[in-house]
Image (cartoon, rainbow, N blue to C red; front, side, top):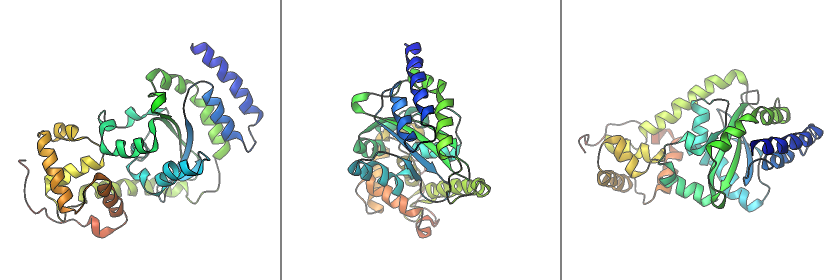
Length: 283
């Protein structure tokens, strides 16, 4: 089975090499990968420590782009577990969705409202340095009828990763992007601090300490059951905290909670630290 895949890959690579300097190289790469692993879309974003991600290569369908690509670049990336893997450091390998988030993530509100809304079931992603402070995120997506990526598939993709990485670097390395490598490390540290502060301080003006803790876990994609385990409280208590959070923030859904949090990343008033109204550490 693996020999057959390698044989197909060798033929596909030959086609890539023939068009290595051509404008259709990204499409050729997309088709080459599909020769050895089934998936729906190839998406390539460029992550920077300042500013939104760059759309390097994505689907051409206009309506699908509005749902998946444009919404992601606008705000969605800030809560993407793959984006947080980029921020916190990554290894030279393909990551499945299960590799970058808690096991309960697929039961979380964020997964249901984002991944299910876009039709994406699972993703396989690797990161690479594209120079001048830009990090490429190369992603393969699968929809529900295709099933999740398996460990065996990820292992095979790691075997051919050097070739894929070389093709991506050849096509995008050194392109003129508004970010410099000199500023990248400093900006990355600043971004990490900013997001961490946002999680810690969000809602502290009106929420108790425990409510803030629950809110942080909700924003991180944890289910009520997972939050209960982490905080060593009952699921019922988590639901009470969630209800109180919604009431105090004048919202009625997790989507509104995400919107408020994303707004807090750009509005310093929403990050202002203040003492919690009550001490509910025993709940």
